[in-house]
Length: 118
Image 1 (cartoon, rainbow, N blue to C red):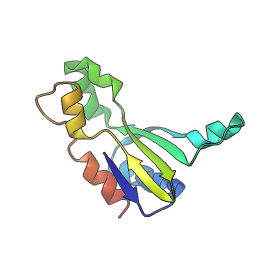
Image 2 (cartoon, rainbow, N blue to C red; image 1 turned 45 degrees about the vertical axis):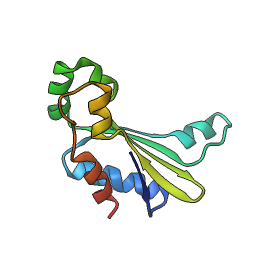
Image 3 (cartoon, one colour; image 1 turned 60 degrees about the horizontal axis):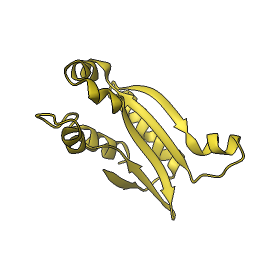
Image 4 (cartoon, one colour; image 1 turned 180 degrees about the vertical axis):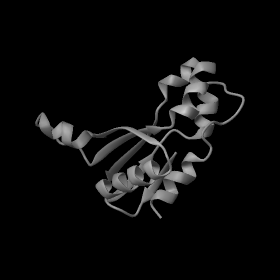
């Protein structure tokens, strides 16, 4: 799934991180991939990866569906192209299909991510 943010990439990542933390989610990592590229002399558009989730919700699912651990914690990629900032993530239906689950997990996440940005 993908949607456009009206904020710059760094601000978008800040807003997502703050909002998700405020909702009780754990931020496992924030990786500024453009900064890492610059550290080795390469150039990359603004690209920030957030790893987030709730171990109380994710752990029981990983116990029942071990392959799901490849996609947990959840991830949101904030990236910029042609002056637009995108937020890209694996949606609930994609997870359902990918792991042949009987339900779409984490259905609230798309709404949460959009709410974080106003």
